[in-house]
Length: 180
Image 1 (tube, rainbow, N blue to C red):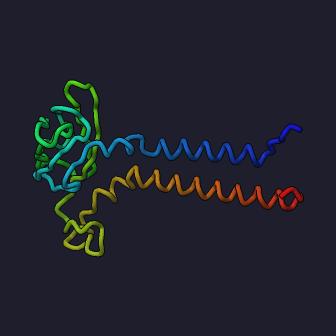
Image 2: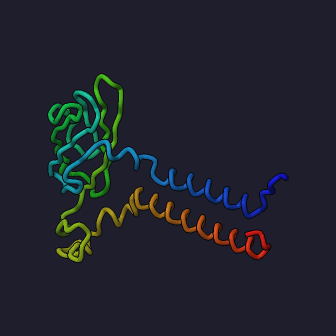
Image 3: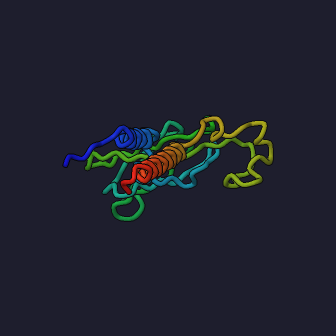
């Protein structure tokens, strides 16, 4: 006996496929951003950051729009070159991408960091985050909107909610028809 796929089954499949595409498209570089570690992740203009490229091999070159110069990564542990970069004093407060080109392998890795203004303490988003005038100056996170990771998490959550609702509707429909 052939099994029929009703409208509900096709709807569930379409929603699941659309949710997977939306979650993946929300931040295409989100999965790649663990390859390059930038510390601290939030820095003021004119400040310095340490860059580590994981699983890069030998030496590498790190580039970012906010860096004063390109940085050669030579230190660090074997396979994880590291180095220091200085953020330009004129860098705008917002999120930036670090692109690391691994020499000899042709691999390019990505990471991110945020240049913050002088408007308050770096409290990690806690209750004091708007102290010291940050409310007047605004923050880069508020100006740029949610991060790609947050958007992907919301997309995955919505997809799970839709799949659960569709599954519940299918179960109730089957019970009402006396097949389950």
